[in-house]
Length: 475
Image 1: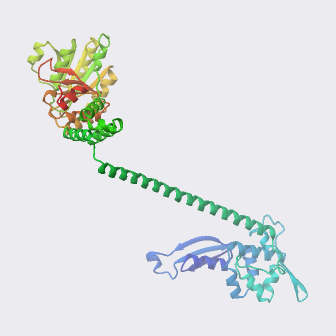
Image 2: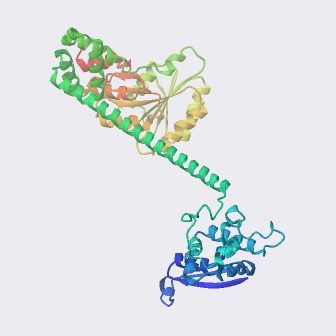
Image 3: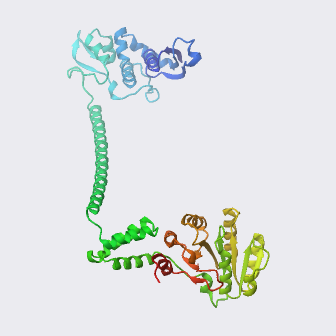
């Protein structure tokens, strides 16, 4: 094994030196890049240690003997595969290749390195093989060896071209051209598709702008205009107003759109369908042997305790449970003979629920989340749902609270609740806010309305007509 270290300013220069001195079959053993403080004391930036077997080095040395320095430099500037084939071809012509050809082919044995025969005699001899070309004095042959494979153009009378290799080169080039054309075609299709999408988007936007201009130029019918102004004054959401007006424009003819009474009648029908209502679960179990558990949830004072008393008086033989209440018995509890358990901890609440359900009583729980975390409330409700059947959770909202606050409470308990209860409806100043909340949360239908302080009279089943009557001042 012949080992040598090469130093150069760049990796490319070092590899060229290795190919020139050791040949294309050299093996890279170690590469060191001198950087930083270490490189400050080194003359060269790259150090490469390479090795080659003595047999391969001997082959290369025999070829180097027939070169002068200029031809040698040009010859070793070719591709490594080309140099390797030329060296093997030279050794084959010299008769130095080992007997076992399969085991000793350190270089390639492709047809490019077969003996080259010239059709012209020089000095009475037929020139045969690479060795004759390299050892001959003819300058044109040396120039041929110094050319790259792409530059080699031998006269037809000198060289018999290997047709099979040329054919294979043509096939490879044809496949590459086909693949290149397919990629180019695919890229063009992608560009065309992207441009088509952009054109479609621009056409859609242009159509919308045209419609908007037409709408501005065309005066809105008096009935639709009056409805728009009225709904805006009632604090109805803009999205709802636009949907109702769009549907009215589609379903009503031009004359009806100018009739205020017809337009408002259409709007009332449409808005009534947008208010979801439902009966409480315990009302659907009348006469059933399975009792029902109802939990009222709220964040602050909203008339929930009064609603608890009203439901208790409405639903006879019910057990009321108050969480964290005052200990004194109120006048309402005494006069209506309500069965109330007042407890201060969650385990006590669960214990009272279990006893009442075992006795076949319906249970209504007054759970006000004053200071506890939302996660604690969620754990309590989830645990109750797992432990007992027929559980219904109702969120209590007050009609005198702002829409923003009621939205906050509703969104907080939305995933836990089954419906809504609106209290203090008799004091409501903005029915549009209640309409917006009921439409925004269709999964939480309205169950009850509290309409005053009198127990148990001031309670009624929730209906959409009641909301719309208060909104439009209808009797």
